[in-house]
Image (cartoon, rainbow, N blue to C red; front, side, top):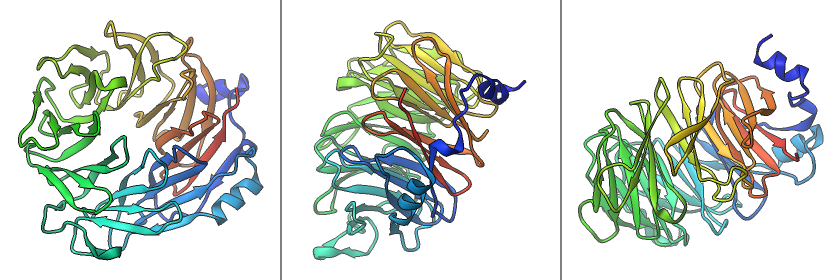
Amino acid sequence: AGPLEDAQNSGVLIPESEVTQLVGHRSEVFICSWCPTSSLLASGSGDATARIWVVPDTPSSAAASASASARATVLRHSGAKDVTTLDWSPTGDKLATGSYDGRARVWTPKGELLSTLGGPAATPGGQIGGGGSGGHEGPIFALKWNKNSTRILSGSVDKTAIVWDAVTGQALQTWRLHKAPTLDVDWRDDDSFASCSTDRLIYYCRLGEEGAVRTFSGHTDEVNCVKWGPHGRLLASCSDDCTARLWSVEQERWVHTFAKHSKEIYTIKWSPESNCRGVQLLASASLDKTVCLWDVSTGSCVQTLARHTEPVYSVAFSPDGELLASGSPDKSLHIWSLRDGSLVKSYKGSGGIYEVCWNRHGTKLAACFSNNNLVVFDIRM
């Protein structure tokens, strides 16, 4: 018996009656993100739209699927092709989207366009979206709000990173440090951030300073993802060189190298500080079909999660630090116990999974699929 038969036999498989299907996108759904202050779920797709779904707090059902799908707000990105990235402001009252046309857009939860960052279009209120003042000249791959919801950081194929004033839509500063596309960006605090690139380098930059505060070099292939840990003490990165690394702003050399994967690492996530293992964990998702859990203090792999039959594209820790979800093009979503690495729940969809994400309470889990749909699961263990 294969993994799914095993799951079915042990009562692990989630039945269709316990899921909410969100239907409406006309192309594959690349990204999804829950609002940090409400039950709204945002998604971005290759159909040049983002959508905001009102997901009922009630248990999943066919009625819930119909209700949520009917009440979706469609954010049309004219001429944009793919919506490649999105991020809710920490205050939950604005959604930023990045797209293939090199523009970032800021929306209200009701779907009103507040401003366009970059490009020639003037935005409501007569604000100009920073076109000549340093907008992106290529697709935006990463986009993040700072913690106090005043600025937006974006990274693009055009090799740059830009910090924008979220209120006026003006570009505050542009960094042209990377020699190749910028793949990811992440704020450390309200004024400083890290960026990574296919040029194998990571830059730590601060608003108001021209160059990089620090350059982290050591990866021997493209750096796919950077994420600051709790309190901004350490930066985690992952690469096509099959390793993840930890860096400190106090030193140029890495603190730890996490080397166990046999293929490229697509993404990484930090666990909540308080979790069932009692140690800070980092999860890495790899093209070798596995997820590794690393003890950040020792640099050792404490668990390998191996049930997927294709590369793992997305991982997400539950807010209470008890569970980890993973999604893959193999159409499977797996939910693992962090206590012992056992498989708790599985779902087999009808398309590959690009991203999985938990709501703020840890009661619902969303997954977005290559067959144009999103699925929401009730997680009440």
